[in-house]
Image (tube, rainbow, N blue to C red; front, top):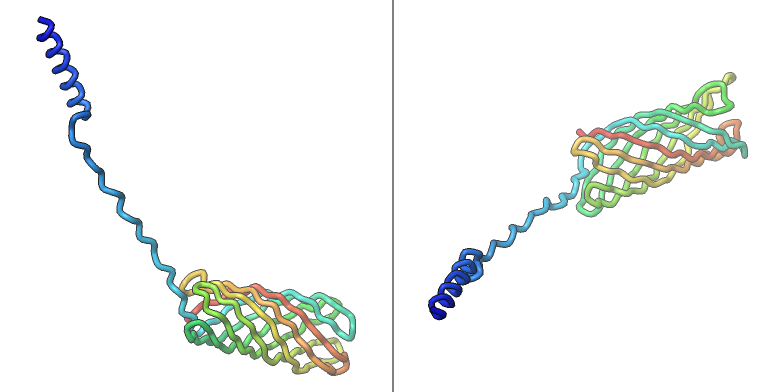
Length: 192
């Protein structure tokens, strides 16, 4: 009888272990499939663009520094050479120069050289600038040079956002003597 009871207890124990999965062959769940990340696609900077910019800065007229703010338009063409981008641009900015009764205008013809870092392009720029200052007595005009740097971010295929800093030099500007200007601008460009 002892033998029957011990055999029954053993059978009950084995059946409980088998139903709990203890005696069954272990099953391996498949490893999760790897998640494919979208590749980083480099922007193609080639093409025409145009847009608006807001500028602020200082104009140094014969040693006196005055504030200037402006709004302007720009347009240009860039060519993407792979790692480098070359381009040309024209822009016109209408300036509100403090202490002057009327406004001024600066027009620039730029050469641009940038580095293609995908959706980001840092660049340097230089060229010629024409500064016109409207005064009560006369309209003063002179041509000088400028250089600077900037950075452009491709917010989408059609829209670029940029910041730019420029240093201008006008030697012997009409009756005002040497005129220097520093400007910083925020730009929005639309690609065509």
